[in-house]
Length: 106
Image: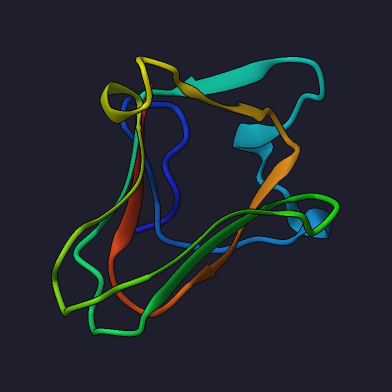
């Protein structure tokens, strides 16, 4: 399944680079705010999910502790109700070890 940007939750399973930012994330001025970011169903312990900005600054770098155990990267409920904001077209999913999908709820 290719990345799906136009629904809630956004579902990602394919990485990209600064030179290949998907059209669904284009535009430099708007922000995307997410209340929950969760890596669902990673395949094995040690699998990695990494997001950076376009300047290679790490935003999230998480590793699965067990096969098929979801990993929460951000939860607004656990962070005082604050959503996590990405500048549209300025962030990258650079690593998503084979298996699992990244879900981002607005």
